[in-house]
Length: 158
Length: 286
Image (cartoon, rainbow over all chains, first blue to last red; front, side):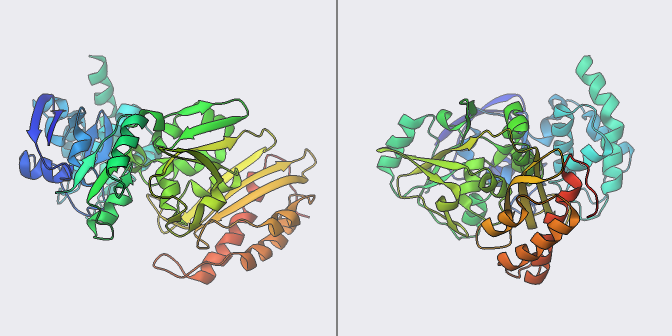
């Protein structure tokens, strides 16, 4: 079936099996391999994308559910032109170890900061509750989100 | 190829259900699509309810509040009316899954999935929620305790859809509390949980109480015996300890990957003891 949606700011019109999982559509059909799949069951958060600005799990969505929506993947943060302040902060504060969970962590962090621009450390932990890191680098991930707060706020005001 | 329908309103929903009577229904997909992926469900046709406009939103109806079934957990959590009238439900929603799960999952899905560990269920039992069910032919209502018949078993006939849940406002509950214990703090499926509504007098006497436990039986567990044992008694550790002994006899948990049955029994009673810490009245050790 034919579906229309906005993908990282670009109007997109494609033919797709209606029951194709969104994570497969993004990675295999659209070539956007930044979105990862790990558990495939909603437990790990690696496949997190933004749908109409809210975090959702692309392994638990079917293609037809994209119709009419605005989708942002990790490739499209900050308009895809440069790195988002959260991504810069992850690099600067050593939040990345093996890197597999990071796109999901970044998307969950952006979702959190959109809803709550000044989260406490506890709120950051709650905001990342759906994302697993098996390198157990949570401490530095929380540090990175905390340090990104002023840059994200500055970005909103400009 | 499996077809997936995305009806926008009741009219489209009844039409597609009429054409595809064997279609499987889902809303957030956080439970159903996991089962489908693992092969436990293999429908030829799917109907996604997330865009049916009549299934989204919260209505203040005076004495009652109607929550439409496909309203997401995060939207409910942000709704002032829910925070104000049903803090016990808001507390459960806050610890349900994770942010993306709450952005996707719906209260109707939590009800129909009928997991004994469903976080909204103990509050809905304690609040004596009424489930509204519709088909192309009409509407019926059922108390949540009748609608949910066992683990994963909801009394939903072919062609029927849960359209919402009705909660009665009741200002008498001056203590509303939900607590769950899981294996970890984040995104945990409960080992045991408890919802409590209490009316406690200024002098600290329990005037009325409703309790419901999750994950300690095939469905949510309620107990008139425990509630009667608490009514008219002073809210204090001794009273709660006596009632907790009854709780341990009432619940019928299983042992599974998350915890053993004996531990769950102890926990169900211990959650009751903690009420001593949450009541807004001065409490002294008896």
